[in-house]
Image 1 (cartoon, rainbow, N blue to C red):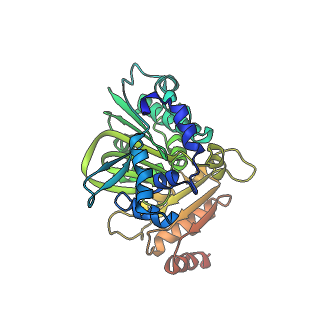
Image 2 (image 1 turned 90 degrees about the vertical axis):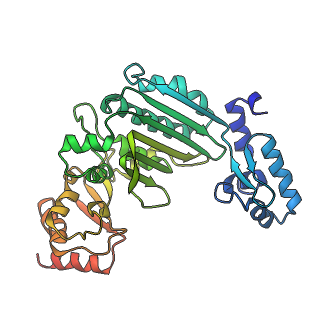
Image 3 (image 1 turned 120 degrees about the horizontal axis):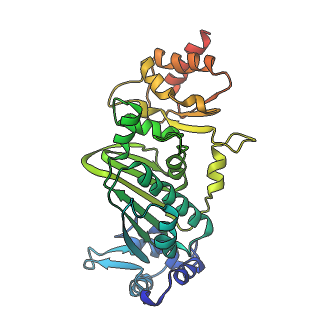
Length: 354
């Protein structure tokens, strides 16, 4: 049945479903998290019989929108993509990101809500432009998977690796420091041609955004605060995964506005997970750790320091940020969030000494 549907027709049919109350919509909203108990979950939600729910599931299986694996006892349901395409790219030949988008990806996603389509276009073109300009790659690929509830775009290349590149260009001692710098924004290895905004904004437009390279992963997950992950298996080159809900109401404009101060259209606000300054079990106690955190922050007017995952800070660390930096940058506003009593006490201690 799927073969006779155009992508646009399918998406119109999907959007016509009542996802708040409709049974097919409810199944698709919850099937990923409830592959084994989606039948019971739907029965409870709609006060239906098992046979009634199974009729809906069989219809969705027949239409190719979900699949079922296993026997009655161990049966699992999973969502299937409406469309899935893999495109192999040569960054030296396929060297215009807008042309690659228009010819290869637009036909798959053209039926999406306009705001979701715009985010996907922005994210792909920004990320693939980085491959063209920075990766020194001889090959790349993009996989696009369109589901009823999600869009996945996976971009990979065989280049030098994004964290290696940043480490070399900025003379960093540790590749993990590259993730801290990426989280701040305005980071580019080619300032004459790039503003360094692409990764920062793309990572905040999508529901889930990941960069994997070497044995590190940079994660920006909408429902989690995980930003750094060390992996056992190394990833050759760079792998970028972008995911967004097809029903998302988020717009590019609201994300840009969130990081612009009042009355400004520029990128002058940033949000930094402080724990990225902390390696392993080391505590944040030194001035050098604070200076690492503060690098390039004089480019912003407002800085939100997010202390999620930080249990305590030392006097020297606090003094370097909240007395020395503040004194030398009186026009920059520092905002602390998710700090605890120890952190607030240490900040008060160094600021009360002024």
